[in-house]
Amino acid sequence: MDFTNDRKRVYIFDTTLRDGEQSPGCSMSVPEKLRMAHKLVELGVDILEAGFPIASEGDYEAVREISRAMPEVRVAALARATRLDVERAASALEPCSRPRIHTFIATSDIHLKFKLRKSRQQVLEDACKAVELARQFTGDVEFSAEDAMRTDLDYLEQVSKAVVAAGAGTVNLPDTVGYSTPAEHAAMIQRIDKALEGKAILSVHCHNDLGLATANSLAAVVAGARQIECTINGIGERAGNCALEEVVMIMKVRNDQYPFETGIRTEHLYPASQMLSGIITFGPQPNKALVGANAFAHEAGIHQDGYLKEKSTYEIIDPQMVGIPEGRLVLGKHSGRHALRSKCELLGYNLTKDELDAVYSGFIAIADRKKGVTDNEILGLIRAMKGGEHTVHLSDAASAD
Ligand code: KIV
Ligand code: ZN
Image (tube, rainbow, N blue to C red; front, side):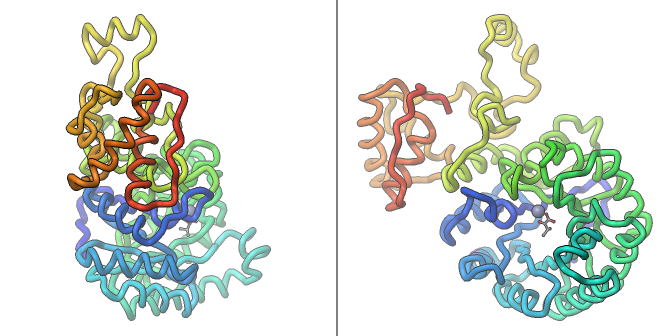
């Protein structure tokens, strides 16, 4: 493992293509995952979880293709704690020069009793066996104690120590059902961090069922966790995962409170968010922190007045820090190819001249019919031009996104 022991460095483990992708409306084809993976690498994520190879042929192919296209990237593949799963993950990761096998099993009594129908001892043995097997394929093994947050702490400590002794370099403690609070999360991390004596990196994976995923992840970092599992736009099972853009920007903007560093190039956050929105069936809600359409919009007269006199009266972040250009481009029928090209680039597409010409003619047709062309309409035109299955739906709102 080439991870540093720098206590300030927090590793960003992106699971947009795995936990994110497995939620409703978010499925992606292999080429779409590959395109998104390139963007995530440009963004600077440390670990890219590309899929769950045993789950489907598509997931297997995605992990393999991403590993093949970007062999230098640390790609993770998910596997339950079984021989079949671990071997399938290892096979998908073969082309990767920095593969991570991420194996997991539930540890809470409620999961043991109703889902796994196994004893604590059996789960402990399965976990260690899976880690040992994974270590035969790679030196980089992560173990997740699914539903860690609702697991008895003595048992969680026992499992964590055992998997590290078996060879896991990262121990992830997910709040699988989004039940935790920041204080509880901090207490759990502190306890396990002390028990592991620095022998492994502690990781958090928070779901957002109570809207606390970001707060819980940050509380965990303050308590000693050094890896955050998160997704672009916070997509993921049910209410989603911790939003990558939120944890990263909080540590950057409020570094006085959270004195940690990540390797994220924040100016790629908005383009990554836009690219994802163009691939899956929905974008972030308009008032979503940092990447929503209204995140930097000032509407109220008093706010506009203050903002025009001095931006910092009502704006705590320069939008350019997250990749939103100054003076957001509103495209209409008077916009030329140059403006359209810039917008396409911002949305994550570098078009050839012919591709731009094709998108431009569709763009002018829409612009002739209504005031302002929205980002979603442009994304629809790009997808239609690239032969995707989507059709372009006109939006009523003039340039609302
Ligand atoms: O939420 C969860 O527990 C997970 C694990 C598989 C890491 O996604
Ligand atoms: Zn999850």
